[in-house]
Image 1 (cartoon, one colour):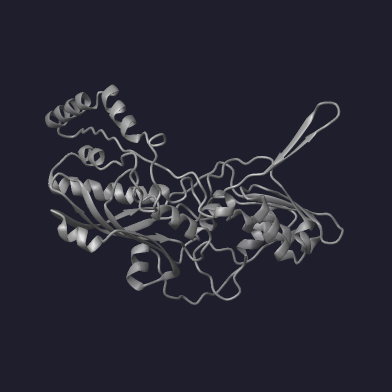
Image 2: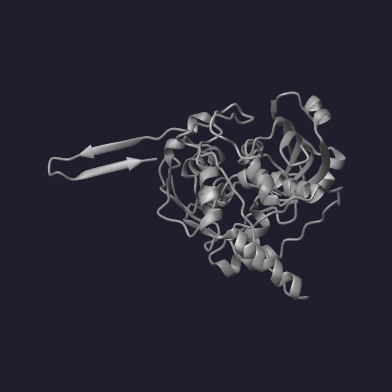
Length: 383
């Protein structure tokens, strides 16, 4: 929760100040002076790859003989792709109220969190009490988008520590600038790739190395990486595939969950690669996307067959292209761009598919408790 020897990133909390008012607490915090020894820092995913600053785990998908498929390809192309971070910017910053019950270490937490179970468990561990003595209440949040799935426990647990030490209720709500410095963002991703294709653009092989910026700790980075690796194929037959993902350790906030949970980063790497391939062989990118789309019965790199009753993307693509008159619009845009110097227009069609399960198998379940009372009323508890 708070570092004892080493501070890993700018904005990492180092102390907790408890006061009667927010203004007093902020004024007291400003009077804290710390002398730091400046240590070497790794700040970007590219620097981390170059210096080997990687967490030990990796995630891998291999299907077919990539070396043979690349050797047999009419065209091979190598390159890199990158996408940056993204701030969650939920309207309500992270906050919590901790209320000690005054008996056996019991505590009520009122937290803006997407994960009340983790808020309960981490708080209990920090306070040294059984989890049953901590009750976490979450009525509603002013936005989360994944940013409050794991990182919010820092705020709720610090509030609980303050309440335990003072014996009084403690309210901790972060200012926007503090929230953005402490909390993680969407993981930046960097990829190196080599792709093999025919002269018309049909994919024959892909070797890709994915790297995410995990920040200074694991957090949920392995789960994000797993989803990115399993979404590199997007909607396309890659041919032989060798996809390996690693998480980089950097001196930044610990990056965390964000809507799509790595799926969009995996797809962005491939779409960027396909755009470069289209430029290299001088064919429209929409042509490459369409001719490489999965057909019913194809199998993904993670060995999932696509059933005819479930796989509708090609039909959707053809229908949208026809009904939206994409060819007509494209011709109009080309003419506009030809006749104007400073204003340009563009048009894109990009397919996506997204896996709806959790990478952690035991999370793919639900439960509910239904009470039907004598007067006909019903109480449903779920989670």
